[in-house]
Image (cartoon, rainbow, N blue to C red; front, side, top):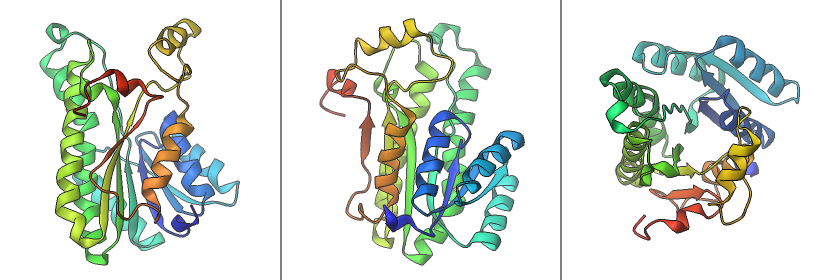
Length: 249
């Protein structure tokens, strides 16, 4: 994956388990990683970790729904590191409730935190990629967009990311920019109990819970020059769980 060497890669939601794994993988392959999240202390800690391995990294703590902050971040990154060539949209928020228990505020929150950052970040960064005739946009989705009980607001927001990915791919294909989605399945989280993991493994054909690195490896492929003929696609990093669903996906 040396194809990402010295390419400027913005990773949002950088301090969660998956975001951190993506940052480590891209940094380990020579990319100039820009870790973007909402908590300055966590961003600083991640950047410190990356730079201790001699990786090139910088960070920014922003409100991902604030266009002014996003534009300021992009201007700062461009001035310090150069044009952004890789964008990984990884902000994620899930509130598991059946539809009748979802408030208006909760519904809006799902879109504010899952979909709006993808829209705002991509809208501001994509024109520069298209002008340079090169770019990689990778959106982190979730298998739940197919439809899972208790995840109505989350699934709706992730479904929108699926459609947005395909539309942006068509709009940008002629300009050397690829846009793809990695739909994660069940990924281990620090607060998962052994009972929860055991229950989830029952529906996973490979019979193990996913690791953040499983998602990061897929992102690494889409971010590299090994995938110039792949765009508008959704890759399922789910241990085969998607096989249980309709072949229409």
